[in-house]
Length: 399
Image: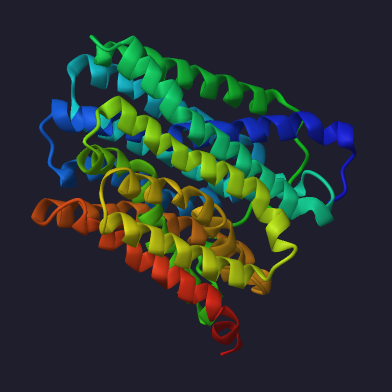
């Protein structure tokens, strides 16, 4: 879709702002994970439940989000997603007032229900805001904006909640989360009142039963395997992005604030990799990049597992760059050449993000029965699977 530059600039800014904000909230739980664990005397399994519930929303909401978009349209769906995220953030206020871990979990689930809607609608929509030949560049740039948000969460949230409100952390949670909620509310209003270009790919007014019908994406081998790989990889990513603070404290013998700051460095590598990803893939076969990057990431986790101190910490920190291209690469390869089944496949791949619910639970269980160090095997296995998917993709697709 070719649109005039003046028509798309304001809508594009709003969408990029939403990418930034859901990147920002994506990492918020990591800031509080150790505090919650110590305050509520949580096991590793109970702590990982916070991360897992965030991703359960993708499992429960991804396909309904697709139906919702078909029923109410892109613009209203974006506003609703931002509004729902704001509601989840506001719930943190009473949860902090009553010091209820279950209240925090409820808020997290609602936040990520809104983010699921935003992910499902904004990723394809940013692609139509400009020339078709620059579609991939816009999507990669948007992901980079999201990575900036994720990278800023730990230093800003950690400083505000854990340092500025050191003697009253629950008070810091209430103030900080209300501020973030207000940003989402403002964006919801701005999107609702903006002149947004029509999304020609949506099927407005589709019969509800027809919208719910599952079509034929699952007859494609590369999609089915890609769905499994995305499911397992997102579990590994959730652990790396949101549950490394307790691990860093244990192997590095450091405090919570320093561990949170070190966790944030992962997102700097992610941010760099996202912006460079599109350029690298114009030079080298994306399947080979996926294979090599996933293999390197698996080796880095193995090094951390077998070491301690700075070596153990920084081998994990370095992973951010190598996993930066994985979500987009798996998504693109799994939905490639599916014709009329592409939209259906896309909604299922978004649903596969729910691997971030199930795999961290296994990680927490292994950590409770053995150790945090031993539980890293739960991260290594999906990365090896992702590497094999990249290296053997062409053979898989031909069958």
